[in-house]
Image 1: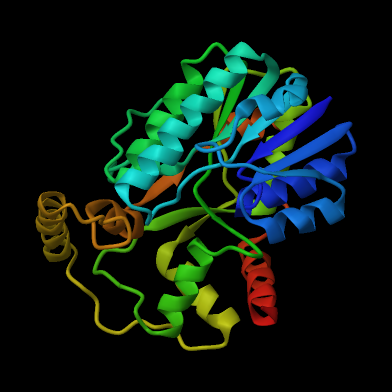
Image 2 (image 1 turned 135 degrees about the vertical axis):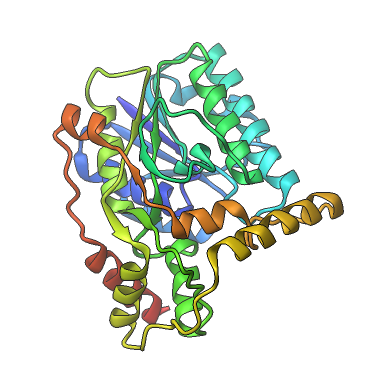
Length: 321
């Protein structure tokens, strides 16, 4: 059986290729991505590679990789991209992929979604069937992307991870490190919890689902839950600096300001993906837990990499760059 990874030069994609190579259960692995340097590195590890953009390339180039193959769909624009890019990559690109695979059948597609699609629920346990209230442009496009997959005629599995970190992360841990180092990490009168998973554990879980007969399932997947303030303190400790907290901001006042700014961003056409928003505030202040019991129990899955090791590995790579 062959494996194909879209978005193979992103964080999840490149570690997924490594995990697939390590299993030894796939005859060939094809990494599709845009970054030539990362593709060359994956080729050195043993993967076949192709510079490929879902919006620009001819999918007929990939016909030899259909049939007895499993595709992992990791290609996506991330939070912080403008609305047009998010819609083009996450929605249009996914639809083009589905159209091609519908006409050129494969064994299964495994898709990386996001906890962001649950949206503005304030408290409680997030189960897979929880109603969705995506609030940001990123969350809305990821929700539509997921619906395109689950409404298709393909055999599919969808994973909804929380915050993803690990070596080479240029998103979550990178932003945290910058905020902690520059003492710009916000602190509120109300403290919440976050769910986190190391990219290597996420990829291990995805590959597990590929090699057994399983389809048409949606799984939450996580490593650990953390009180937000404790996560910041751990990160600061590993960075060997003092936690950046000083003044605490009033939760109600900041939430009111976020509502005003969201209206302003919408009227002016500015993206608020990395700015103050209700979703970002609730992410930091609500007691919300991603319920991953469905996947853990079905696959006997437990995370191997602690948040401390995940951050330490990220720091080591960052220091060497």
